[in-house]
Amino acid sequence: MSRPDARTLSWTVHPIVKDPRRGLLLALAFLLIWIGSDAILGPEGLVLAVVATVVPMAHYLFPNEYRLSEEGAAVRVVVGSGVKPWETFVGYTVYPDGVLLAYDPAILRNRITKGVFLYFDGNRDEVVRFVERHLPGQGYYAPGAGGPPDPPGAEPRGRPGADSGPTAHQMRDRQDNRRR
Image 1 (cartoon, one colour):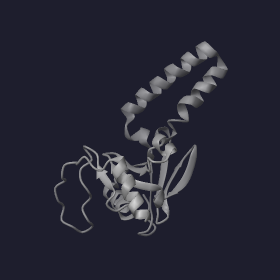
Image 2 (tube, helix red, strand yellow):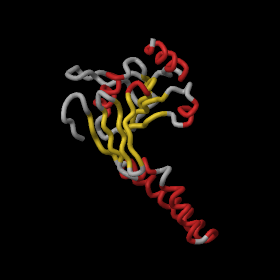
Image 3 (cartoon, one colour):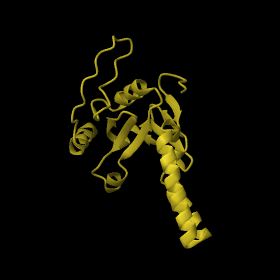
Image 4 (cartoon, helix red, strand yellow):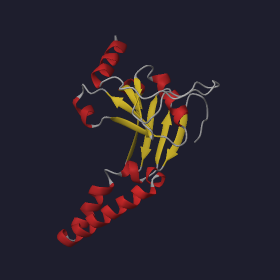
């Protein structure tokens, strides 16, 4: 994890390496699909099966490079990259393994792609603080994710239980109020 200045935060995560058992199960499933495709459809089917299984799972199979800045959140993976401005997001949800920056569900496409997921790499509190600074008061903690991070320099406190958090409609209303 690099940190050139307080206005940016960068790190790289390789999700499949963090959970080798799940990676092994995924590899076995891919192998079965590829063998079946080759047997039934031939070499063209095998190529199609490899593309159809690897591309959708690229965020899990390959290293993800994350960069949070004053402009927005950037994610770089083998099959694509891009920077999303903070104004794109209406809220966030903290999970035990990462944080989901949520898109506005009022836009049809955003109902399909819920948002941008940022995996933690031992930097949970730092990432959550950075996101909270840009989306203040618009997040909640999923069950098992603990509570908000302790402020820098503060005495550690107990983690309150997760609450149910705002609904997608409440997050959209907050975004509408922020635009006014």
